[in-house]
Amino acid sequence: MDYLCFELSFPDIDFDKFYEHSEKVKASHHVHLYTKENEIELRILFEPKTYFGNKLCKWLEGINWRKFGSFLEIKVNSRNNPNLQKIDISDSALIGFKVGSKQFEGNYEYISIKIDIVKLYWLPSQESINTGEFYLNDSGFELVKKYYAPLFGTDDKFSISRMNGMEAYYNIEKASFRPEFNFCFNDDNREAKIIKEPKIQFIYKEKVTEIEAIKYASLISSIASFYFHSSINYTFSRIHLEAGTIEIKKISRKDFLPPNGNLWGFKNYGDFHELMNSNWQRSSLDNYNKLTIVVSRFLHAKNVYDSSKFLIYYSIIEYLKAMDDEINSKFSFISSKRIKNTKCDEAIDILIEIVSQEEKEEFKAKLNSLRNDLKYRPMKRPLEEFLLKNKIDITNCSIDLKKLVGIRNSLIHGSTKIINYDELEQANKLLYRISGILILQLIGVDKWELDLKLN
Image (tube, rainbow, N blue to C red; front, side, top):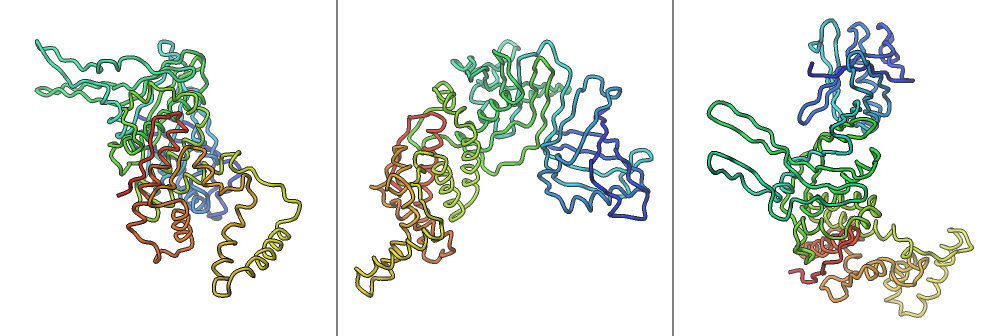
């Protein structure tokens, strides 16, 4: 059988309100789960007279598709799947659906639902306990291939071996891992094929939880994605724990960027193997949540142009600044926000009296731009303080911090006509280098330099 069976229900959802004159929808439905290379399909079977497919479509129009899995309850039938303990799609998003009169299995009509992730919990595989394998998307091939020599044959014998010095496993907390190929063979008469599937192979040296195992894999894929400037994610994984084997199938969205990046733009010329042999583990684990967010933004910025690229790079810096408690230390104001604003307005009205009439508006704008920074200690601009704290000084750059803030404000307020696009291109080069260096520091890498030459 090429599918799994289970019973599916939608607690507290009244589907019959959408078609009042049809037969009542049953409390639960039989479902066939199909998984293919880049597809997860649920076929929900129902009796045609209930019009459940149409009712479900009506309901789907009013929900958040990203939260689709949270509305469902699943019961596994052990008679049909004796080794299967549980199916979990609670975190799945709805990708699409299809209903039609030609979709039948036996006497039952079905609606086809496409989702992005499913977890299967099986009885333990004793020979594989304390190991895990995370198969990567196409971009991951570039990562793994650097660990292997080309196919070599002599005396009618063929072999693919790992590169010298790349046989060992790297360490991360309770686990060790290394990039590997899973080799699949296909011998068809005159032609034999070897298919190389990229994966990260784990050995768990101590007892780990499902959350820890997934965290390790996600962290490594984030760092690899940053290094190669392309989204390197796992599409299928098996985690073999004492309690059971967990299989996770995820839909991989195609990345527009080929995995040909590196760290050269930050004056770090080491390869990924050298990065994995550095002391990145503690810092990366401590900064896990920040890394997953900013690497995702970093990759997104590479896929867009001009003003959008600038704003995304800038948002990385602002986000990390906002997460720094030392930089965002504030004074304790004893008045309400309304009274504080009134006092600031009064102070500005007094101060503009000391400049000439023709310069009053310009001076007032200058004072208004500073009023938000007054709440922070120390009395430097928080953004400048944050960059200097991270050893990033752009005072000698052709585009300084004031210019970056000005471009950002112009883009935010829609004043794009006053932006010089040659300057915007240079600003994007600078922000790429700054955001990349900040990510390197989150990873724990101190081998970098900021190149201020933008031409």
